[in-house]
Image 1 (tube, rainbow, N blue to C red):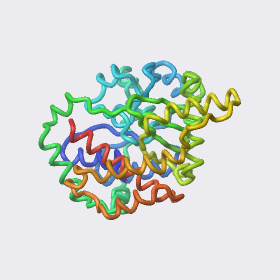
Image 2 (image 1 turned 180 degrees about the horizontal axis):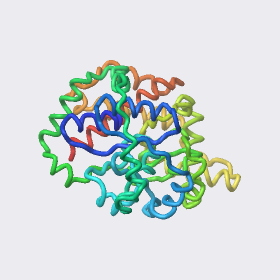
Image 3 (image 1 turned 90 degrees about the vertical axis):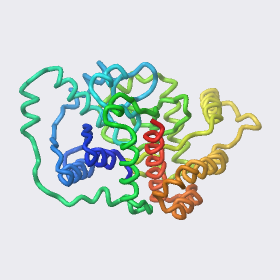
Image 4 (image 1 turned 90 degrees about the horizontal axis):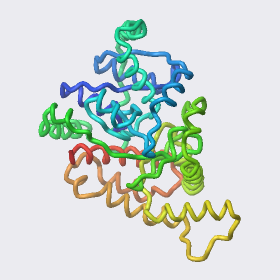
Length: 340
């Protein structure tokens, strides 16, 4: 979809090189796609094997941000703002890729501090040069995107801002994730953004998970429960985040619901049902966001298709929900780039 692989490819074609990382199990789909992309773009790439114990050690030492949010560097790395400014050119928080890529970012940062260590030399010897057919970017066509128009439009944006300007600008939008099993999830932020994803390879990170304040854990558990009850399709999507914002009243509702469950109180009269919020207020926001004046002017998407997706977003259709997530992600990324 319109994810970081596409963005990295566009930047590379524009002669701007930015590190991008993929983390996954051996022979996983994520790793296969990453290799296809890099081979197709003729970009140098490496495969690393990293010990879970190593990850847990550095997560505990440096990753947790007491401000209550997860940040991304080099597209997906996880760090504090101070570390971001030391090691990356463009800082985009929440570019909707696999957050576990952040472990690789931190790992490479530690290697750079270590100088010309044996580990660094080993990394540079592990290059791949086989040529595979790229299919990932073709998936954009699944929901009516004119890929060439998207690429041309992206280049138009970059033409307005020279490379040095991009390097001096920290383009960012904060997010949080809601998932009952994700150790990198559960933060409520000022912008009322709900980010949903499926659990993925995070069960060994108990030390980091234990550092998440209890109030955030309660919210993320309940948030997962609400979404899977009212939108079963969202609950089964793999490696996909919908990036759907919540109405500001949801925070109050969740706090009241948690209190009711803990204290076993009856729900007071007049509290709006979760389903009503999602089915009505969320649909209005989707129309406003995806069918906005800016979106229509860009003309990257088949707006008839987008309208149909919005109209049926409450149906139990995981494919439809996944496409909505990609559309929302693409629109959010474009807005951030255009704003900056």
